[in-house]
Image 1 (spheres, rainbow, N blue to C red):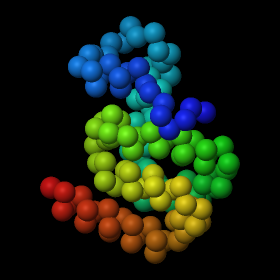
Image 2 (image 1 turned 120 degrees about the horizontal axis):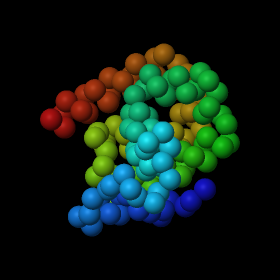
Image 3 (image 1 turned 90 degrees about the horizontal axis):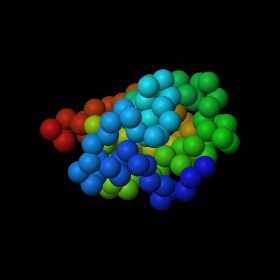
Image 4 (image 1 turned 30 degrees about the vertical axis):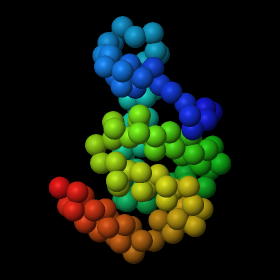
Length: 127
């Protein structure tokens, strides 16, 4: 897997004022670039109920999946953070998922409810 300083041609083109076209040489997966899929996935991590689902499927204990979560840390860089619709909750979830204790605790309905409330309040304050 790439390190946290990885760059994506799509994001690089967009951040330098360029545009993305579907004729790009980047491979497509179901019509989407890897960057677009990773962006969609990392934003889904802001949903505590989705995190609970991932934990219930035992994905949060899979070493390959944990490594993928580490790889997604590149979204903490300003170049990539700007593409996040809700950067606060998304980055908070990504940071929490780096902690083994949180990956265990998110199975608890109480933890899910508390996190959902915190994220809701933070999004209200941001607006």
